[in-house]
Image 1 (spheres, rainbow, N blue to C red):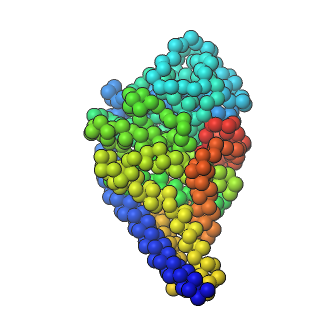
Image 2 (tube, rainbow, N blue to C red):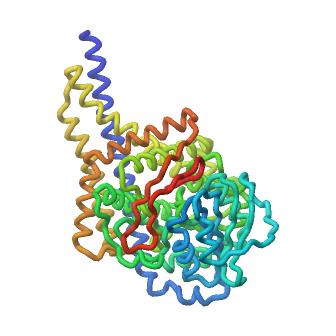
Image 3 (cartoon, one colour):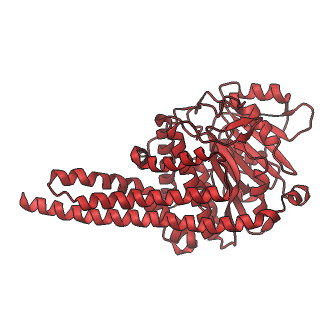
Length: 493
């Protein structure tokens, strides 16, 4: 028994060191991304007076864009969302709404609002579509830029593929039906294509939390922090990961994720790679990785960029149950992507993507919940074998949580100094408090949910979406979602 206790003691000491080193490295990597984002933000502020938005809007050479809106049971908010898309500040665009077999009144609301009539149209088969396309509809007046497609339910990826086939324009943006774009968002995210037309193949914009904001006429007219602390913590997460993290990766030339809620792509390349993958729950991120793989394999010079200013507003889960479903899906998607493209990891053929970005996601995103749970389990195990190391406990708290909180606070202050989205001091204070509260149960719960998502992916379990409950953005908002079922295969954020 003494020998066994000695072995356990040695193992615990080794695990102590490994966990501490791991969290030091992961938080340092986040800090590096924040610093890189800061340099990009400085450049961004210098360019604002000369961004040429007015000229781009009037320039006939600005490439036209097709806005794809996959919709499944979006009846309560779909009309306001489509009006907002049609009113985007952009010289030439079309809005393609794909009703993916909705069982509610999504299509009926669209038909009544826009006076839709069915038109005969032969759909191209540039990318494969599983669900049968039943009909295509346009406004009776023949004016406007709206097309509505009705098809059998096949999932979000399949709906987007149908939209890609129908899209007429060289640039394609994919926007969730429950998301809201700033008026100039599309023009801003399209600017890299105009600045570097030969190399830019995709660009993404910032996704921010709409909970607590006031929405009128499909526009965010007042930005405020949500009322619930669970949602406020997610605001902090989104700023750190979606804004600063992706800006830093874009600066490194290693951007792997463009959110499915708001991304812009070259249509010809979407066709080249076969459209959206239906065998991966994280179809948006998988598409970006597949583009990297395809273009690197062909040794083509290209750029995939992230633009910090254009904003897409999206509602985040308001309850732990719905949040748990979301985080399981996200981590399951990451697991599937890493497994599907494992040949790229550490492969010098894929440059920074293979040698830097994918290894980082494997070590510091995929394995993070494993190491965090391991670190939390070491203390009770040490108590059991009477090998308590109090020094490890405080060092673990300092490195894993203290250092991480410091990085988050720096990120928040940087974001507020550059973009200043929250005008009320109490909103800023709430965000700072949320950064501290994130460590008190929230991180631990999300670690458990992420482990469950990875385990489900590794075991090959069929994804079950369940019901996504929407609380509605604001009482004055016309976009007030009550409840939305994912209906088997259709993804909800």
